[in-house]
Length: 143
Image 1 (cartoon, rainbow, N blue to C red):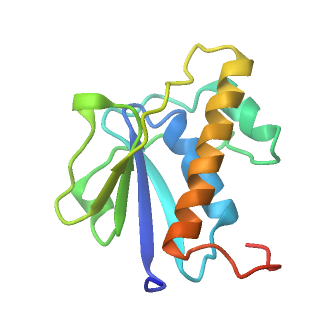
Image 2 (image 1 turned 180 degrees about the horizontal axis):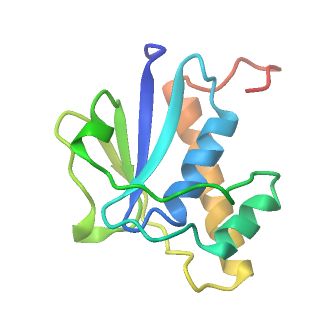
């Protein structure tokens, strides 16, 4: 079990798709007393991809007001873990953070069927991460 202050950063290049979905799903499923997530990008886009907003809306998650943000040293300060998402050489390295890479396709300009597959892959990965780290709520308790 980790301290109540565990914070996970999900990062991709534009912070307009994968990382937004991952942070939203993490915060929906995590025991907030133990961990929460934020998302950021190395070159943030102007908005979350509309197809991503639509795919998440299907799960009852509203990303319409989410705004991509730049991954900075200040934002990373105090975080526990960095999960990069398919950004290859452009993925950031933040010294001192546990790091994992999830090689995921970028949902930008993909048909909804493909975006759903990416979303569902992210959901499985988030669920496994929460279970592995002990950040999921106790059985029978909703996050």
